Amino acid sequence: MNAALDGYFEYNSNHPSERVNVLRAYDVSSDSFSLNQADLVIESAPDLSAGRRVGLRLDFQFGQATEALQGNPANELRPAVYRNVFQAYGTYVLPVVSRPLQLDFGKWASAIGIEGNYTKDQVNYSRSFWFDYLPFYHEGLRASYRVSDQLTLSYWLANGAQQTEDFNRSKDQLIGFVVQPSPSLSWTLNYYDGQEHPDVAVGASGTSGAASLQGYPLQAIANPANGHLRIVDTYATWQATEKLLVALEADAVTQRVLSSSAAQRVGGGAAYLRYQLSPAFALATRVEYLEDREALFSGAAQYLKEATLTAEYRVADGFIARGEYRRDASNLAFFPTDTAGVLRTHQDTWTLGLVWWVGQKQGPW
Image (cartoon, rainbow, N blue to C red):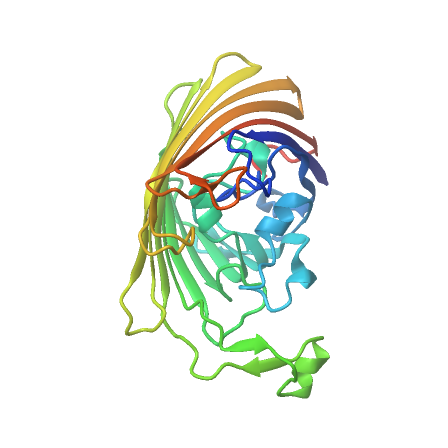
């Protein structure tokens, strides 16, 4: 059993009138003491050395980040049902030839994109534009096969991107691999294909008694869209020295409304550096670029850039403090100010983040 608490205070130099830091995934509140996450993780992992092929993991999440991460009504038919269940999956490890094949069923955090949910495991406090845009979670079946010590293959069959319950008859798929030529170097490549347009919606009256028994009525959508979402995602991490970590990410996303429609595209990437100056103190930086030509991410056709500098101090085991400066910029006047209707081409934020965690789980959560 493991628990974490993550909170922050953030100042936005634009003084947005609604006190919202736009295009942020988690640190969305300006000029407010904020509870970002309160987490409870329960895990019993498989252990082949002990003859245990069965595993179970449950992650419960509460707070501001939960509202950003979980249960968007655009993706979920019943968002409130699953909102606080970040992950819930069971594992069984099959013996295949000389290597194990791991199967997971349930809801799991997406491995598309280099950044993840738990702040303690990231190099910066805030998350990138790409973390905000790429899928957060999936529900379905996934398989992982370790071909060798250097190569692991993955396959997913899921309801969709951020769909605990499927809203169409189509299933999404991912094929990926992780190459680790040495303990200090890792490269991941993912290809994701899915149909993210609903063919049912919550309506005034259901079409069947079974739908009503689930607690909500469904109505079929006439002539639903059938275009596909395709994501090519790759990232690499290199522990160059004992103190220096380097990471790179690149992403290309295409979306079609109809199978015959022209593709809408988002592309770009991010670069990360982290240097451990002392056992207690580290500096990290992130720069990224996101080309949102068809307004799929931000709602405006624009080119976004971002630079972040983070100072981390490890107060004690299980407690870190991060001070962070971040500048978001666009080729458009997009970011709100203290005057309604007046926008700027940038926003600058200063953040103090505090993260605590306890439990027996070692390494990234």
